[in-house]
Image (cartoon, rainbow over all chains, first blue to last red; front, top):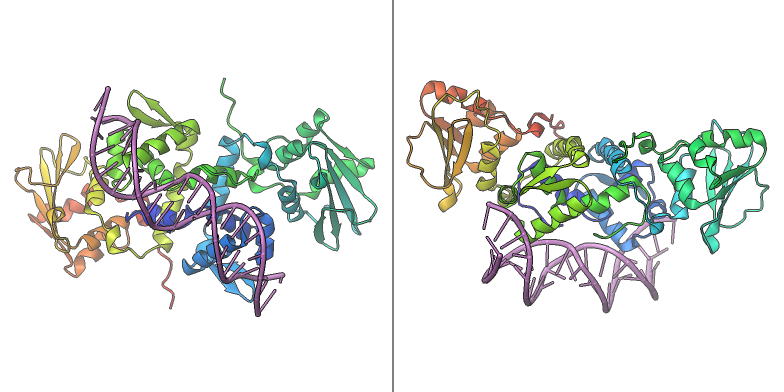
Length: 223
Length: 223
DNA sequence: CGGTATCCACTACGATACTG
DNA sequence: CAGTATCGTAGTGGATACCG
């Protein structure tokens, strides 16, 4: 962790925070991932060695404490919450372009699974099946099993009857998830369809709380 | 600029913002430095090649525009202002410890010179002379010449009569500047003294607007 | 499940010098 | 004043394997 040799608190803060991955680790912790392997699921391209190193650095800096196998934010760490939200809003407003490699279905499902609004989902077991038509290979199909106020991501068929299917491009699903377009707008042109009984088709959007940055107003398009 | 391959707007934002120096360049731009060499004065340990590269990256990303030799923030860039302020407040609260190499008198004077409250300084020319008793060598003495609603930093004697002298440790002056202690508290134990006519001694603190993070409340000390 | 260890490739960065 | 050019290295981070 290299120093700036400036007394400015922004510089002192960034000595810690501007290292690669650090802010994303904090984002995961703020999303209530507390176990090492849960953190890894939100950071699949980060090597375990590096994640371990960052967690140590954050703990030395006093933002994180390891407590019985659980990484917990301290007050100092938790106070970065509003800042990370603001960065998310800023990013949603100003960094709109997503490359194809940014579209990782594994991350999307992991993200969705932890933002299920269990009060909006019918009692019993519900299975949401995804088919991403622009994805080839084994990551084309996903299942989200929601039961007993918990949600599990499956990358192969769990065998339960499917309640509703989301069929269409991963890109469009991500755009909806990020709030680039509304559910309504995103379903309009057929790039994405919800397939299932009418009442489920109608209510599915309410099963998930979109990310906090999703409601960020996008700047008026430049002419 | 290496990618995270995540669609999350925080990740997309940090791809740009977490590179070394980038946030400090933005800080300088938000402080209204717009010329290349003014930016350098606020970033003395950054090589000109790297500063140039960062400015290019920021301009490609749409945060900065070069306009007749002046680097200007776009709307996107200016919207990072509140975020940088929040990071400054967070840093002031949680990263209190300053190493000796963090105490750069050149940066302190550069910072002070641009936060002079000209309405609080008497008309005509005022010269504030600094002697930092914990600094050896040529950076021990500084002069701040305030006249005609402008302020200039001199690292050798400009020859004008000195209006008031600030005499004491650089560390204490930085602590006051950052808001770690008040002017009053910082002057109490004699580590720093203001030497000059009584009315000037009294009013000198008002000649400067402390940094925006200076008023940040420090967390209660941990026992 | 929850990490460490090892190794290599790369490249970003710092230092310095130089130019229009 | 406003940058480029060049060069060497430190060290980060990616991949993979392995351990308790």
